[in-house]
Each structure stands twice: as structure tokens, then as C-alpha cells.
Amino acid sequence: MADQVPLNQAPDDNRQVVRRSEPLSLTPAQLAERAIIPYVDGANRQLVDSFRELRTRLLATSNDNFITLIAPVTEGCGGGFVARNLALAMTFDQARSSLLIDCNLRQPSQHAAMKIDTPRGGLLDYLENPDATVESMMYSTGIPRLSLIPAGRSGLGGMEIEHFSSFRMRLLLDSLRSSHADRYIFLDGPPTLGAPDARMLSELADVVVLVAGYGRNTVADITAAAGNFDPQKFAGVVFNENG
Image (tube, rainbow, N blue to C red; front, top):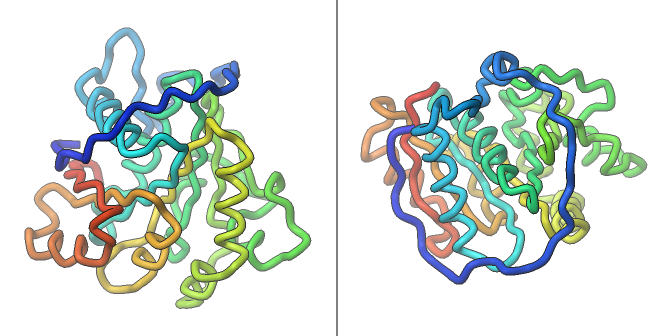
């Protein structure tokens, strides 16, 4: 990650939350296999600090736990990598937890990247099954205070639009946020250009972070992608070198 546009500043969040303690079951090598930045004995300090800085600026935008959409400009510019590591950075504070939701329904990647089997399905299965429970689609990642909701079954073509605008999707996010005051939700979104899905997801989010591929996306691409989002929600652009 090379740089990011400065985010707006706001008062710090001083709320009291319940602290949690979970064992770390992944080794630094296993974290690296999952394209999660291992931070052991000062390794990867510059890259880790970049995500810590982005996390701090996001926290300054609101006094409440919030929903952040991570939206790549185009496919292949590392939106999933940024979403995964930004969600991780939130958990560095033991008073906070993260939930990562894979909303890139056409090309889901988080379950494979994190090497998680999903026998119970995921987001799509929940949205299409009124009897499904929230707990059934949440998976442990092996990282303290970080959970994953995978995309679930694939092959829906263009039907994502109906899911992202559905009452059940909105109700899900409201429930996930209100049930834990210390939980910050990160949506790993689909590419912004070429389809309206990211824009529709942004209507459910409080903050939008755009991910541009360093040397991949042009200024015109980035400008066009940013134009899809409400300026009041748009936090800035992250230039990512990891595809």
C-alpha cells in the first residue's frame, strides 16, 4: 500500500466496550499464506503502520461503530487484500472487533484467501433462506476478534443487485452492528466501474474507501469510480501495490 488521501477528522470514540481475549491459532507463516500482514518482532512495520493510520483516520470520522465499504476501482487492484488487512488492523485494539463480509459475489475471494471451508454457506445462502441464522454463516478466522462472512454459493450472474437492495440485507447489517457496540463491519465490495453493485452497497455503508491499483488505474478511472459515491461518505483513495 503506497499512499492514501487524507480522511476527515472528528472527535475520538470514548465509549466503553467489553474486552475479549481469544487465542491466536495462526503462525506468522500461515498469516503470510493468507495475504495477511504478519507483524512479529517489528517485521513489516511500514506496511502495518499504513493500515493502522488508515484505521485511526476512519475511527476519527464517527463516534459510533460503523460500516466501511472497501471498493476497488477495477478487478485486480487488491480490494480484497486491503479489506482483509484493514479489518485486521481494527482488532489490534483489544477493545474492538471486526467482521469482514465478502460482498464481491461474482468473484468472491475471502474464504479461499483465508483458507476457510464454508460448509454452512455464507451471505447469499442467508439472504435467500428465511430460516437461516446469522450465527450459521459466521466463521472464525484464527485471528482474535476477527470473523468472516463469506459470499456463499456463486453463479448468480447479475442478480446481486436484488440482494444488495433487499430489506433482508439492510436488516442484516443493522442487526450485526447493533448487537455488538465494539464491532466494526467491513464490506469487501465488487469493482466500482462496469456495474452498479458497489454504488448500491455504498448506500448501506457509513464510509467508503476506494482502492486503486498502483500503476494499474488511471486518474480518469479513479475519478470516474469516486463519482459513484456520496461525497459525505467518501473517505479517500488507497493506492495498493498488491494485486
